[in-house]
Structure formats: structure tokens, C-alpha cells
Image (cartoon, rainbow, N blue to C red; front, side, top):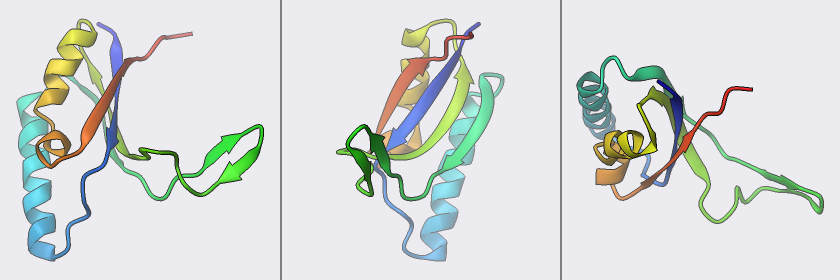
Length: 103
């Protein structure tokens, strides 16, 4: 069963400790529902930079990555179905899904 990268975009940082606890509870519930599919829970990420032949910018692009996870799924459609329940989606963000190709 191939691994798939879930790259999270958007979402918002909790403003209070209570919001933080509620957000973590949503993520833990989602992870609990996909137990056995998780390869790497992942993490949120900090500020990103974009590197290209014209240099490095601090913008992180139009829609910078806000975190990631790696899951196992039979195909990209199953991975998208799993991603659909992700708290980042229900919180107004998006998830980019891609199969990880072993080299």
C-alpha cells in the first residue's frame, strides 16, 4: 500500500490555550479514526521561504504549507477521502494530496 503526503495549507493558529486544546482534540479524534493508516503524524511548520533560480523569497508562495502528515492508502482516491475529514479542511484550510514515489 503506497504512502501519501498530506500537505496542509491554511488554517489558523489558536489564539487561546482553550482553542489550542480544542484544536488538538479535533486532530487526535481524526488520527484515531484513521489509525493504521498513519505513517507519520507530521507537524505544523513555521514560516516558509521559496527558493528559485531568481533567489530566495520569504513569501512561502501564494499558499504556503502550514503542516504535513504521511498516510498509507490503497490509491490517491482513498487518500483524498481520508484527507476530507482532516480538521484543517473543516477549519477553512486545504490539503494537497500526493502519492510518495519510492526511488
